[in-house]
Image (cartoon, rainbow, N blue to C red; front, top):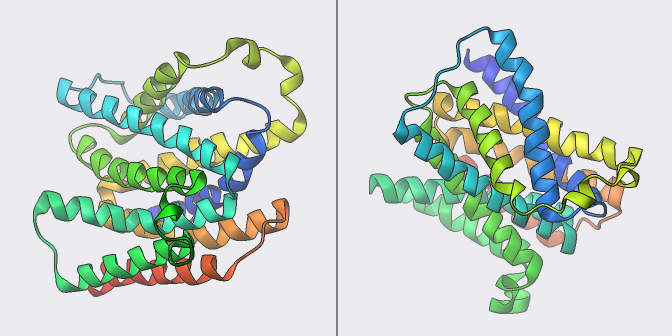
Length: 288
């Protein structure tokens, strides 16, 4: 069972790595809220056949689980808004490296606060992860101003938000079917985004070029319907920390794709900061 989840998680991380470049491209066609709505609504539609094929009766969640799903949906909306904003004003490769390498550390910090337990090895891992994140953000050159630069701030919010999602969704699926949970998260996130869309932009046929459709397919059906669904499914089965550890494969895919397709430079601080963050994740998961 775990071997199958490991394979699916590896493929999911590939879809996430490519998605940062795809997001940069689709930003040229639609507003942030429109992209969030279209991303989640298309994933919701594509998820329907999965539930039908499974041939299992859909059950409504308890009020406690529904509150959890609502919380996740709000976090999803916020994460995706900042995801598209960050990739629009910043570089896709930088976002892919920073968010995906600092997310496991954020997850560990949140879990440690909940459990009120942390050991020296985990502290070392968190310290290395923080150092890697500061290097990626060019903190030691720009100082504290690096934390309020638009793209850095957006990516920082993404990292904290997704770390929170990783922990909260694990609790939400303990007493409820994972696929039904994912399905409802996509539906409610779409509903939240619906209040902020520009319908005239969505109904303009000229916006749907092949260039957009191909990239939108990978950022929505690829990274969302497949990638995020696998991530959410794996959460309660592998645990929040081990699940988020898979994310360390994403940075190299993200910066490679951004370099080849967008021509973004692969800088020394991205490589050094990314490697330190990956080492920190290894320490936390395999040495603690």
